[in-house]
Length: 460
Image (cartoon, rainbow, N blue to C red):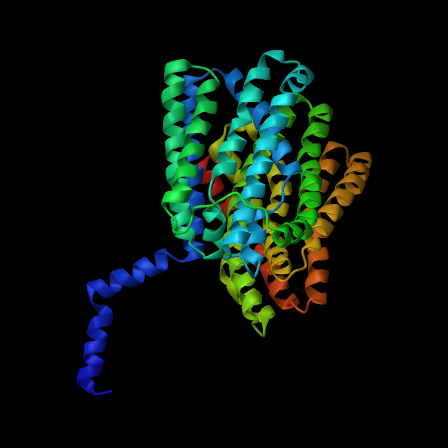
């Protein structure tokens, strides 16, 4: 290359247009999109909570919690893993395949709506709130609206259109918040929140067809696709049912064992500890899984190298940050809340152990699923359930309520060990990378603890 050509190339690279292009490409990277999306979603939900709590009475949020619990239970108990199925399958672009997935999803949604309507009266009586029956029955409509959406929301993940998908979800969330707030101001009851969900669900369904090409679907049931879906979903459904038990039983038990104020601290700490999980879940499912599935479909030789190369830097940053939350929990609680809530810090430190281990555990799960080892999810869920039962019971006998909390906080550890064993059998485990992550997490704990000592007194 001549000196003049080299100079011209340097000028092109350093031009404002080239700099803007590089900045745009960097901002559009999958990992960065997930980070920004999670932050914006959390901020918007915080704003929504601030607005709605000023427009609605506390009882409305109790109603919202009951109905959300019903929907969560019904949906998770019938989870078929559509997204993972579409992303992984070789024929995931085939029209007959996508039509069949859409049809099964729609049928499932209609059945869920009917089930919720049929269960509305007995459930409302079980809760001791018979007046909730019409609201519970009406909430089933959200399943129908969701079932009508195009499979483009699933293929977008397969094609790694994370920016477009995240932008769509952000717009839908903004509309939901605006609609709920306006209706809350006008009506002042729970129907404002429910109708806001209907409005946002309809918008998401419309956008699923308008934003993505080739999104139109037709009613079709292809036998080969149905067989493949059943083979795939039987593990997903079993794992989801077990997850349902795992995610709810601690709250049911501790609500009976703890005084109301202590249980409030536990719930508050659980909400704070779940903040990192949004990134761990979205990064694993929207960034890592499509990349792993593509590498598997392409027949990449060194899958282990690809597995760890893709997750290394974000995982290390996450580990340091999650460890930092553990170490600085007392400072976080003291900054956010007054002295009455200081006891939440101890619960936060314990529960964040599972948050720390969530990313390597989720990443391992996605690698195993992408390479066809679907049963690993179910196996890990069974291990969690066994651990929570045995360790929770033993912990409560030895240490009381805090022993049960420790069992919950450490629940991800045995599941991660199981996934390490499965990765090793698959030739995908690099224990040096796993130990490096844990070491960085411990460094984060130390940094958070040091920050609490040095900076904490200045912030209180």
